[in-house]
Image (cartoon, rainbow, N blue to C red; front, side, top):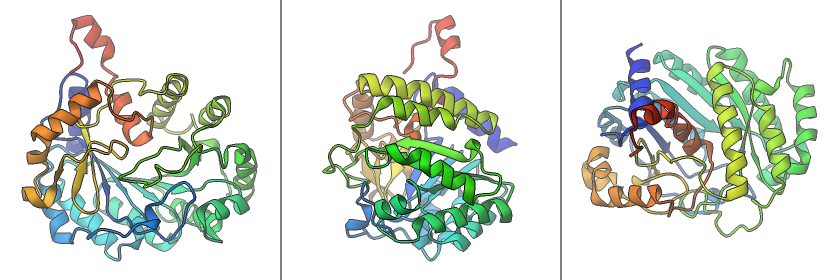
Length: 352
């Protein structure tokens, strides 16, 4: 209960001021990957030296307000110690409430173990399993035969083996797959007993030079906005929180597609940050402006958070001088960062 209160408090406070420490962090534990996706080039780069368990413990012990973590890669299950990583994070980040993990679904048994480890820590596992089209197209886009099958197996095993968690099939919309989404949904209904639109999550292709390494891929974001809105509207089902976020994400997407800018004030470096496997800290997964190295600051995020480089990067974000995006990793905290807007307007308080 206290961790939920802490998270809610961080969300509310982020509506009015820059937090003293992030309440949400995206942590890419590895850039190694066992797929070769056409719209992501993480797999095509030499992976940096990753944190040891001891280093991870030091990092998250210094996160004083962390209530929400996104664990991502590369592919998280390629770390042989990923269960220990989850355990170390949950033991050291004492205020943690939501534990979100992204996986490509190639290793179903490990995905189940991850969910169980999160539950054992008394936290809520939210796991996205990637799928980017019907079987043949998915495997072609992801560069590995059988990727579609393993994603569905992972999703089904998560639901049956650790039913207390929240699990979603996550599809990244791009020019390569937008015209095949209806066909994908037909296959999902056929292959997954009890499948519903509440099991789906959609996001949009984004380019990033420091994260996805896909900034030289051209045209994947040039897709029909009507089709994008159609599919996003399908996933507005599920828990109350999911319905709220998906509804607001849909509204924001309409503005993002028409104006090509972040629809609401971004929370990057106001309440959130991104940590690369090497220890380099960024505002987010899109803005290619490093603000510090954890290994050079005694693994203390707070020393980087208050550093002049972080404050300058935050200023750039506020002035919309960053690339701009509507990625769920940043969109969801931004949506929560607007929930107190009516109160702000009533009291005449300006967003900082």
